[in-house]
Image 1 (tube, helix red, strand yellow):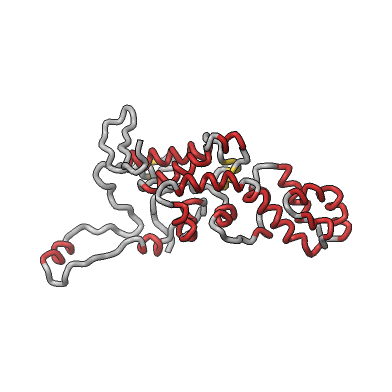
Image 2 (cartoon, one colour):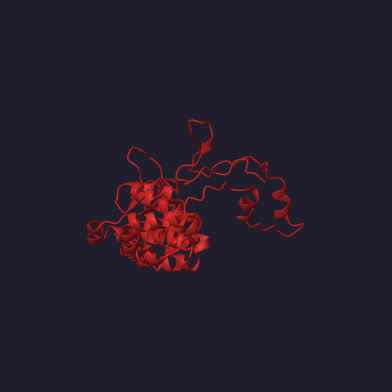
Amino acid sequence: FSWTDLPQIEFVGEDADDMGGPQREFFRLLMIELQTSLGIFEGKAGQVFFTYDQAALEQRKYFKGGNLIAWSIAHGGPCIRALDPSLFQLMCGQEPQLEQFDSHVLPDPDVQSKLKQIQQCKTAEDLTALQQDLGDWIAECGIPGIFNATVEDMPKIYAYVVKHYIFLRTAKMIHQFTDGMNAYGKLWDLVMDNWIAFLPLFTNMQEPLSKAAFKAIFRYNYSTRGSNHREQRRSWPHVRPGRTPPPPRGEHFLRRPNGRPCAPGCAVRPWMRAPP
């Protein structure tokens, strides 16, 4: 098995050549299985974090997960599109504003409750109660200064606890995962150097594709004015704005239960009547 060879995908019971559609669908299904079955991610769909699983670390499952994502990206498939945005930024060496982090997205209800108590600490009485109830736990998160802290320090302490829980606590797992991606042509190093460009691939941004963004994907190369090619092009049928062109040969548009068409293997619904 070679990671660098282009895979030829064939689904059982489907008699068709792989013109790109089956391959994209395979990688789309692979990314779903990676999130749900490998055991290296936890959390809500579309906003996951790394699990703290020493058995999975010993079995190098995080390395395998990085391998599979790099394999999909390198061959034109989708990425995971599910990492928490703050976690992804921390993985790329950035410092997101964790003071405003929404603790409700965390998978552990107990940690959610503790973070909420830190966030609601507004008075000296609240601080005294917090130090008595959660002081030892906060200190174990790498903030021993909690016992000398003031109310004004609470936003920073909240950010420190969040960073510990989503990033520092699982640092070995994350390192093994990025090693798995780097095993494929140092791909993770490329991601870190261009983290803004890769943000939509690793996180679920849930932003609709605008008309301007769609048009920016294409580059127009016109034939010389007055040439035969220019005259022939004028007679070609044009696609009106707001309509999708017919699919390429070998591809098919399907219809979802809501009646909207989609292309097999696409991570998101294709552009249809995009807003200006």
